[in-house]
Length: 456
Image (cartoon, rainbow, N blue to C red; front, side):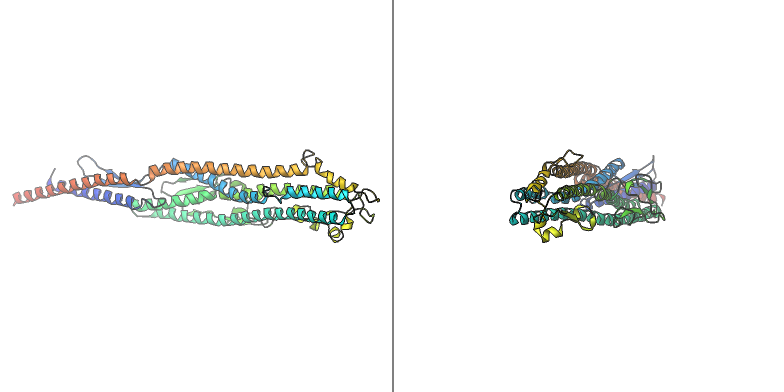
């Protein structure tokens, strides 16, 4: 080996180990930076040649990253459902009293009290009062459920805009990675940023992605519809008028002239969770509540019109629905009965007995709901139990996916995170190599001087 060759080898070794020391310093400096993936130098050498840093490797497990994305989908989905179902659980909470079941019991008892004293003004007034409270409670529950739907609807629109922001930023980084002339460290910083964007997107919608040969990634919905390819994006949008409720947002592609609704394509993530709560979960609860209120009104009204009031007139509808819409949100006590409690048809005959009031009170024991399998009270109790089970299921799912996410995140930290102890060991190793290269450089320099003097 000539002196000049030795100098070149030593110089390259110095530069390579200096680069490794600098990279180790970068790792240590980012030990607490969220989303940072540690990097290590890739040394390359050949026989008779010096070492050089051929590249900078980002320590990243792609398969683990895919698993984390899948858990982010599931976690976002369960989190969205949990948030809304917890509100619904509070609405139907019967433990503190004053709920529909308790009011139903008082309602039937008021009819029973009236049957014992059919002409009693106090009993009639008490019946009207508790009936108004019952109808008001149905309206209140209905209004609260609509509020949950409206909240989910707003969240859907917001999430679509957030998703578009992520898609745009991912495409921007794709173009920077594909066309950059920066060193590998700069590229890895962009890749870390893109990974963070993918994590944010994964909370909102489910997707799959792969990396192209130029380093850009392509992102697709579960059915293969593209969201990002290179620097191009297919942004989402929301439209109204396609749903049974004209104010509800449906998800479409922004540039789709046909505005084909893709709600069913989105199967996980927060967006799917809010869509399911709005369109399926709340609708199911609302239907049960509407069926209950309509059936109570129908049975009571049918029996009430068979009896006679104090003035010996046949009874009229006791409950009415505003605008004729037989839903819980429109249930009211007849204004005529509120204005004149003597119009309550408590008597079975014109003789002023309390037989009709007793018959109405007995409705509580009739198997009216679920195709003749449930009383009104047991039907409502089943609805409350069903809601409680749904809440328990989503909480269990949220906890399960949270635990899995924690395990995967810890595993990723073990692989990709910065360990101060390990970096300090690397620093000592690279410094030792640097010092050895410096000594080689000095020795080679002296050798060159000797050779030059000999030539002279």
